[in-house]
Image (cartoon, rainbow, N blue to C red; front, side, top):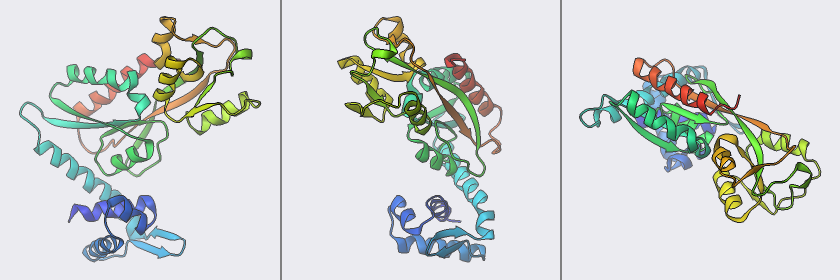
Length: 285
């Protein structure tokens, strides 16, 4: 089977639309339709039900989805392992959200180099949606993210609970903190809790969607904001930042996502245990 047929099938499953799948794959809609027609002819069963409201899977399509994900995953593993240089037995593809690379995943890489020196590493940075897609397609072996989605063949487990704390570049109490507040969007649960804790807060002059950008701004220009304790701990110790007295903390879980049943063996379990160990060192509990 042409692996592009399976990739196209999975893209339609994720987007629920032939047009959107074509855009993501950077091909024409007619090419998408031709690939699905070829796949259905090869399998001898229709895979999709198309209607005005969108595209759904037939019973055969639901059945094939798991196999399509496995096909793509095995192909990616074979392609990468065949290209390995001498001295390495396999390659491990890891993806994480930007703020989770900070301290957490960058500490896991040297742990891996010591524990499994014959396993090559390929690291990716992305958002939850993109990381989940790469995991489903077999392009990633492990993903670490804040907002995973349930997918067939993928296991999701909580890796750690981040403690988001309000810090400022000068000592202050919660009664006097919003003068130069920088709002960092840490996701829907944080937005909800933040809104309940500070219902009278006026729209901040600066709002950012990336924690690293918010931290750089606060350190360079002064201000107050929420950041993970593991990220600001060293700045607190150095006196560059101060916890805001009386401000509430918020929790933000980070999740580990991987395929548990593809026969990778003991080395893969060791890699997962290493990640859990490094996460335990960063835990705020």
